[in-house]
Length: 243
Image (tube, rainbow, N blue to C red; front, top):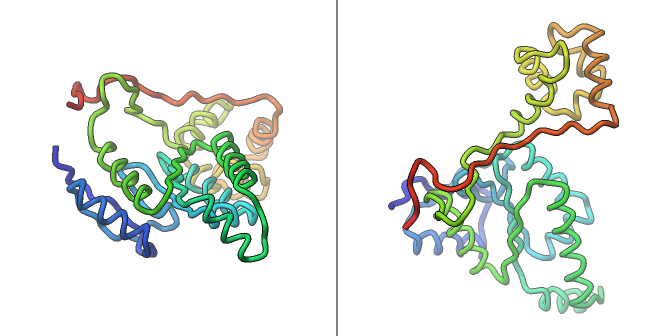
């Protein structure tokens, strides 16, 4: 099956990884398209937003808190989030030693695994570790290819994944006095559950009185967990299977 949808590459992307992705896309037989992704990842394969980090960038951005904010933003606004980390740990260790920052392979690996575990625990984020630019490029191209083919009969495929706004809406609509229309106003005005924790933000929501604002804040600050189930289907999509 010929893939007609191009792999999207952010206009800011350039360098060895970009070139590796372009070469891999050519081998897979689909087009690429440069587009401003507005901070929603470096590449987009189907509905998967892909953020790429070298090992030095991964560690530095983690210490600065930038990586967590990036993944949180992607998780809140994208259907699927994939983090691709590329590079050789041994080369990173050698670079650190040359710069007078001695470390070891074991310490670096332990640090990276801790970062991966934290991101996986906190966010709906898939992580792939590649040894170099070429392997990372191949993975991104393969992912784009697989995203446009039906699942194998042996695998589970998410046919419908509830969007983040749907999850928020499902939770908010369970609160007495808040219907679909008010949910839409809340999401339009506040944009996130976190913003709804501020009374000043809720006052800006049209048609929301003090009693309803108080009730919403009580629910959002309650110690009781709010559970929203995501919907997944297993098996074939549209009655077809990959060959």
